[in-house]
Amino acid sequence: MLDVTDFILEDHHTMRRQFALLDDVWDDPRALGLVWKGLARLLDVHAACEEEVFYPYLLKYGDSGDDDSTEGDVVDETDDAIGDHDEIRDAVAAAGKEEPGTEAWWTAVRKAREENDDHLAEEEHDALPDFRRNASVELRAELALRWLDWRYAHDSGEGITYDKDPEAYIAEYRAHPVADPVDHPVAATSVTHG
Ligand SMILES: [Fe+2]
Ligand SMILES: [Fe+2]
Figure (tube, rainbow, N blue to C red):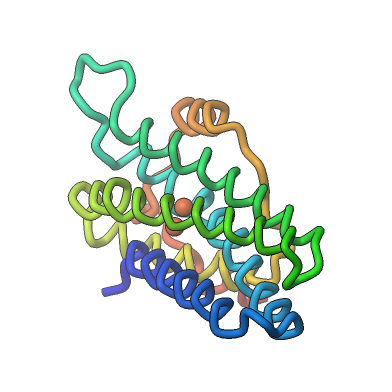
């Protein structure tokens, strides 16, 4: 059965591999530019996709902490994630303003790598296990289809969203929780197939 958390982990592996590729071609600005072009887009698209297809559902189905808690685990996990995404996006944008291979470019890329490494570890230790423990296999499978559907429509980077205010993001989805994806399956003739 498909599982949205597997697709997320697959992207994480690709990111780590592509950061390592930069080290392989460290003295070739042309190769650095081309590898980075793909990796920069993946970082932005992956974060936006999680914000569309994963975190709204983690907020609804993940571990909300103790009943008497005003701020549950999913709120902390989501707040951390959106804040991290913003940091990663800022570093990606900073690198985009520099010539690949220059010191200023490497500084921005190293910052993106550090922020991303920390963020992936947090997601893999907190948010993803929370979802695997608390979301049904049917829900994870349906979200996997939404993940694919969204990615087919946005892999070019077109129409993706960038910096978000974590508190506003959480407040929005707490006020208007997502509908159950299992009750509202993605259509076989969705926008990506048109
Ligand atoms: Fe991720
Ligand atoms: Fe993330």
